[in-house]
Length: 478
Image 1: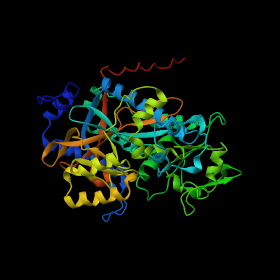
Image 2: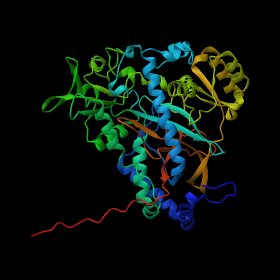
Image 3: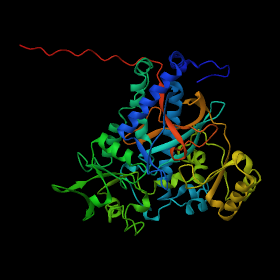
Image 4: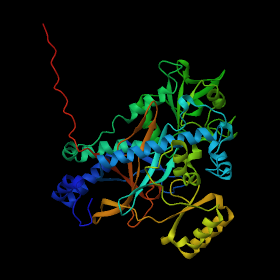
């Protein structure tokens, strides 16, 4: 919000002035009203193994994060470039593997990737799209530079909070919002549905889309039900679907109905017990055969998770150069891969200065934050790295940017990241803003909701006023 001279930046000035006019107790009252709305709407997430209860309200902070439109346009170009390159990479890995043969990525890295799916070799998804929905985690350092922290191409979650946060902020500060010229996010679900239907429109005029969920005990079940309701499509579990003659059908009270597109929120391993894990009770037997024969589309495509691997992440700049012959617009955080002996020795000698991450974990689990770790924790991670070097990467500890958060002591700065969501259909659409996750614990760098993080509304502030709609013309009566 503030520049180096502690003055509000231009795009924050109106919000700062309004907050300055309000007493702390008035801000707290509005904060509590927003939290009551979240409880009433059932905006929850689940924490596996939590002893205090299976569902929590994700903490929401009423002070929005603002990004100027000019800066957002640069981020948007970088995200589109990255998604196009990653999609080409996934397709190449499951076909010719040219990038491996040309020595850009070591064969060992691809072969040892835990999310590589041999069952997907030779698959040709509709329109050649593997990653229909992507969440890209961005961080910003104290110099103002954005970096990509990681890519999420399997079942990225969090967009429902973006949409709900926007509704909450409109209720909390309606006048500020109307005057701010914020780019809208309300059309996300219609754009998502269009992209899903586009996958099978070469076969069916009006493709029938469903959202496949693992069920109500999944941590993101609120999001599954919310998105299905907003798109007007059925929310189904594996037991609701059946495959017959390589076509997928949904059980209904009127009999079986054909399904053309499945927006799946189930990991690859559980999609089809005949193709992946035989003990899965969540998937649909025969689904992969129907997919392989082109009778149903899956989003995201099975196998896309290979681009989630954090070791593969280290090679994304080279992936962009290889497939697009362009320089990356958005830089990676400097990354050391521990399978390489030289880089591993550097990491082991500097564990107290680095963040160490496992290649395929999520949610902020299994990490070592060097500057805030003990000697015992560093020794434990050193042994883990030596035992399975392919499973770890390390990055320097970034001094993440902060934004104001309403705390019990008033407004204080807290560290944040940003997860924009990208839809890949007939064209690529980047949702303006995305999910700002905030580390609510003072000094913490972990923003994940399962570990005490919260979220904010993210405003992409247009420098142009929104167009004023033409007045309605009353019909002529005779």
